[in-house]
Length: 238
Image (cartoon, rainbow, N blue to C red):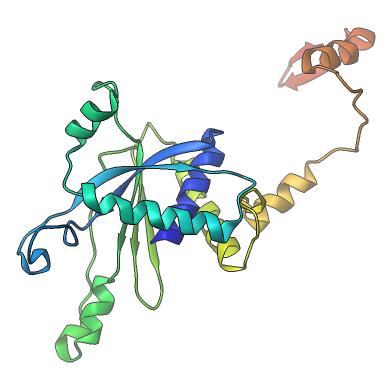
């Protein structure tokens, strides 16, 4: 669960360009101070905000360890409502606390049914979710971890959502392979990386202190009437 949260934190950080990110995490509500909570019948789930500092210079193992401590510290607040959390933090009540969430379940329902044997082993369980946030990740444990990404259109484009699982898989594989620094964790899939490298032009020396608009101006001035773009019968000069 913590490794998955770490990969999601890096993903959100890379997508947003922000070092400090927040997303929702689902707590079971059965390990708090309520007596015999594990024996209660019913749903005790609650979703809390998880604030993560994605420090690119941090060592991965130490960073994940700190993330685990933060996850365990949430146990004392796992029955707090989001309304109360907004009041405590002074957050604008009109804005959501987070716009993505991670939900991890230690048991895959289909695998659990198969383990029963007999007629139950032929059954298949599936879940239909209606996410309340633009992007949510549901993970189901077992011998193989099943990941399911849900998204709300038009807040999240379908093509962008289709690329997200590949990016998440790349991050998880890098975490498993022993990457040393958080900033070294790759995001692009091997195919995306090959296509990006194929688009790379020849190396160019850029003067120190140069600005983007200055470089564009220097490039365009000698060739102001040269064609910069074509579409059908139309064209656009520099």
